[in-house]
Amino acid sequence: MKSEIRTAIILGGIIAVAIAAVSIIFSTLENPQNTTLNTINEESGLKTKSIDKSRFKKAPELVGISGYINTTPEELEKAMEGKVVLYDIWTYSCINCIRTLPYLTTWEEKYSDDGLLIIGIHSPEFEFEKDINNVQMAVDKYGIKYPVILDNDMETWKAFKNRYWPHKFISDNESYIRYDHIGEGGYKETERVIQQLLEERATQLGLNVAAAEPLVDIKPFEHTSFRTPELYFGYKFAAGRNQLGNEKGFSPGNDVTYSIPDKLNQNYFYLDGTWKNLQGGMMLESDSGTIILPYFAKEVNIVTANQAELSIFIDDKPLTPDLAGTDVSSNSKLFVEEDDLYNIINSVEPESHILKIVVSDAGFEIYAFTFG
Image (cartoon, rainbow, N blue to C red):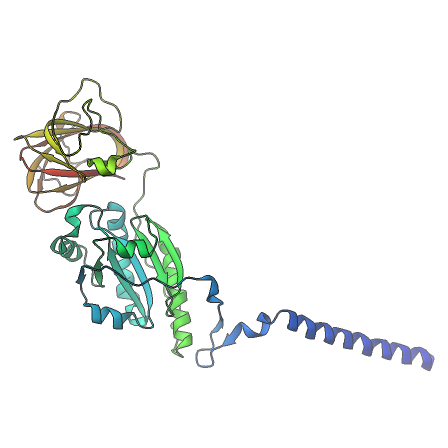
């Protein structure tokens, strides 16, 4: 090969290498995140990405709190420092909230030593849920060990711009909200976020990062795709979704004597007896009264207050064991002793029935039907 050709090839190769090098340099300058966002924790060897948090909002202050359970204001403020915090906005008579509690209590037990703090923000739907003794009863009933704060005036609810029960927000150890989930479900996704944020925290603090643990294995409640919607007995809550089937309807603040009509419509409730129309529910004024509901669901719950004895019937027959809810006795009766939610129907598959509840005590209050 002639020396001129060989020299040209060598020069061409040098030029090509130089162009490639320059391209890499300019590529790096145009995309600085390639070198600045990836960091290595020398102790753990965990490779993490530094995150631009400018798009995340900080968790709001907990404001307007009227009571504390399992903590004090000073203890809570100190406990929140540098923690991954899961804020659970709930209320104790909400069936959707109740179904999420086994996951929360298990996560608290599993991850609290790793830097997770769960705070239950109890924002009441009904007036009786503002009573700290009632909330304490629920905390004990469901084995809640984490802090619960009473947001009776819904000020923290508003600070989070919330509209739903339950609603979970998770902030990282720098108080940036990184995740939120409305309603039931999403348990695996939520727990993976908890694990991720705890790993980020450990890496920032130079702590040893534990290997990813198996996710909590709790069978979630299986909802029926089509079921009777939630029904409210208070005229305030029923506005825009009135499903009181009696012809007289609601009469705010007044005592109304109702009677059961001949024709019943699915998903409407009907009253017999004299009932006081309240904002949040109905109070029985006569010595006895009846509630009738044609429904379709596999689970029926009632939210009630004041002590009373209820007799439960399905299709005009005493409630059978295969349909009886967990709060109904063997003789088809429900004894209301606390202001709470009670499960009265619990079947394997969704079914269509006419539910009849005979109330034998004046002063009984009912707020809502919920279904599953």
